[in-house]
Image (cartoon, rainbow, N blue to C red):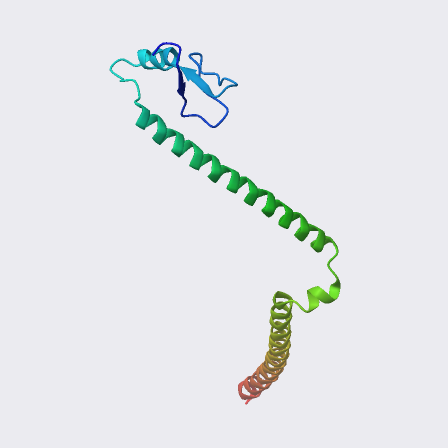
Amino acid sequence: MEGKPVPSPTPTGASTPTNGAPTANGTASTSDANAAHAIVPGLAAPNAEEVDDLRRVVESRAVELDELRKDRVALKMELDALKVKLKDLRPEDVIDSEPFKLLQSHVQHLAVEAETKKAELDRVQREADELRENGEAFRQTAVVSIQLSSLS
């Protein structure tokens, strides 16, 4: 078995030699595999089925990684397009948007409520002024009555 290439469970085009660095030809020698297993006592050398299983896992992960990279590129392009659209946003687009309409409705409701509260405040202030005036007139009348009753 010595010197015969053994497929590696690393991505296509790379293998792991004894020092852990990938090789260019995508294979590792049996001595490399045996050396790796010699580092961990009690670890048996992988059989061909295990190596094939690992290769399939690595290949499926590589495909998944490639798909994720493509998705990332597509999302970045979409984000860039949205940024450009945001920079060129017209006032009409903002005015016609649902969030703006909702906010505008809320502002109108608050404006009506503020007017109602202002009218109520004015009414209460007038009542307070009237009570002060009536209270002062009552005090003056009471003082005069007391003074007249004390003179008699």
